[in-house]
Length: 327
Ligand code: F6P
Image (cartoon, rainbow, N blue to C red; front, side, top):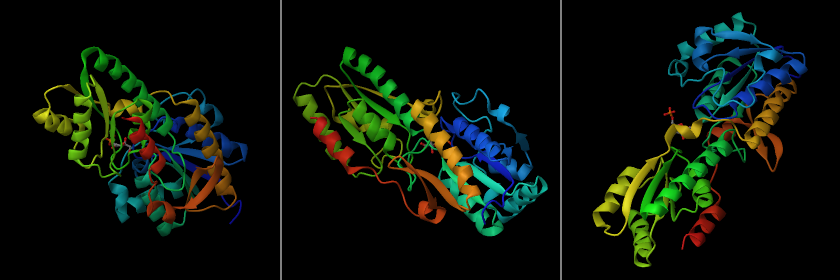
């Protein structure tokens, strides 16, 4: 299987993440370094289906390493979920002579590409790009570090005003199924409670904790709630708590999509650069149907089948210390 590829297609898919551009740059320049041609497919699988494919050169990816978003644009394609959509995509790749793919995205992207590989056997590698850090097989995904720093910066600012007014803030951070941003930004921002989808704290336990603060004359507090909280959104929790609370003035801030934008941190740029080169080298060395990951600071390749059926568990140590520190 070694060295049989000559034209690599690269695309971003799913939710964008800071550092995706650095990954695109690394794939393009890595491919050219190894004397392969490289094509950018715009808007993920949508562009593959519509034939929106352009040849890229080393200069086409200049001045993007520091930029948020993705120059290739991204989408969540419904049509690629259908056999007809995938057949159209395959025809377009064939028309352009593309014989290998690098996808940058999250679990939805990988699930699609795994299916495509099973059907058409196009050598494929994924690079994990999502702010959620929820993928098995890698310690970090591209974008997580930047998004968490963005959340911490926002939490620090909210703290200033919370203290000035003696207020209790429920702050919602992203993470539909994953509490990575919440647990890390919550610890870094000094939150009194952190609500994540993976841990089953009850509403009663949360409110008892807040009552304790009220009794001990705590004047202000921050609670970080992951978007995927199983006990209610930040807004719902604030509403319920306001029905029984008579000491805190309560406010809610939803950080939302601002966590997805902005210039990537040094960490995400270096991670993306390493992963982009590793993806190209993996394809050249015969890796197929795998995701690049970083484990103990080493690049690794994990089969999609292993990634898709597993999740990146939250580190129990983080949960433990967040409780110790929030007395
Ligand atoms: O998967 C990344 C993510 O930002 C999640 O944290 C969030 O739940 C989701 O995407 C939001 O998706 P959309 O941008 O489509 O609203």
